[in-house]
Image 1 (tube, helix red, strand yellow):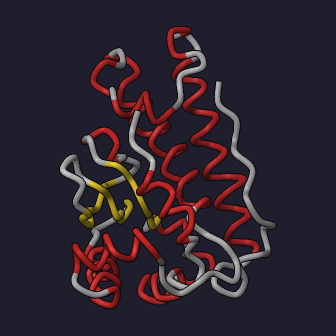
Image 2 (cartoon, helix red, strand yellow; image 1 turned 135 degrees about the vertical axis):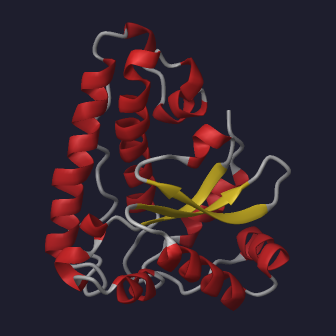
Length: 203
């Protein structure tokens, strides 16, 4: 049902912030495994053939109980990683522009305040998980953490930007220095993709 989406850049393109080895192992091993296991979980459920993963995750409570947790884990891992890679780019701008910047400053006062709050949230996340900028049902922006491979879509939130805080995302390069990984991540964010997500309504 699902194929691993191609990276929008070469595996070495995010150097020096993410090394080639980090990207290669994260993408071809971890992300691929979530894709494979998602397909395995759904192989006996043809009703999901052709259904986008975001739609499945938004209606997770309707997924049969016997495969629901497998879909949460592996569907979330597949979707979350897909957004993570899309959110990155080489030679990125340091700040968003236009409507996204306006929405961020409306919610957090300044972009610097947003960066600090997002970084603090990612540093506080215990164990494995993700830090997100999401849009709520009323249109406002907020920063949330999710554990493991849980996805904000399943809580009715629209993901705008995400940071993978699992150790497999950075340990090969940064070891236990999560703060350094987060600080360097700000240099490779594709703000244009995030801006498109802000403007795109959930189905």
